Length: 162
Image (cartoon, rainbow, N blue to C red; front, side):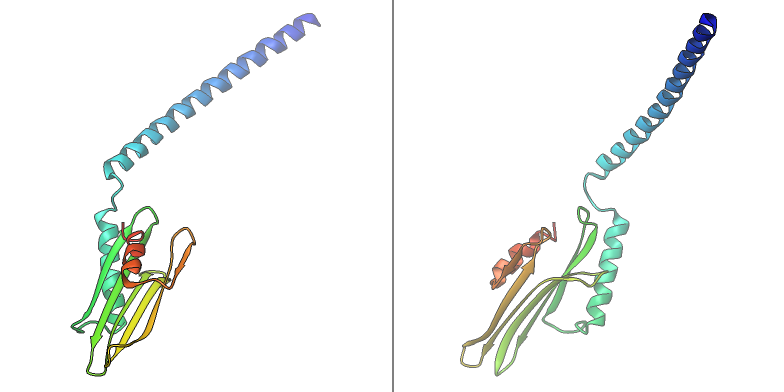
């Protein structure tokens, strides 16, 4: 009986040793993969790949055309692929100067999801009286900034465009 227990214990220890050996091989392979991924990320240095930037620029231009702004002299857009957020952001700025009024509109949105993150609208009548001023931005952390100026909109948009 005692010999059977000893044989059982020796076999158990041998089995555990083999299991630990197998685990060490798997662990070394995972460490190698992790080192390769870390090197790839560090090489990228936090910048979006050219492919992601190119897709973002293409989608932003398509959206700009689709929204009817192509050809408008005072309509511009800026796009940026934000790698941290994994999103393509676009800011439109449209200005109108007419005899009876002038206006400025800005909007920031995700080019692929078409989700709006903020807008700013301002209008002045022919007598120079502001008839509309509205600004709102929802920051990535969910904080909402309301009743903001054009400059405050631009500052808030920088968070998306970094």
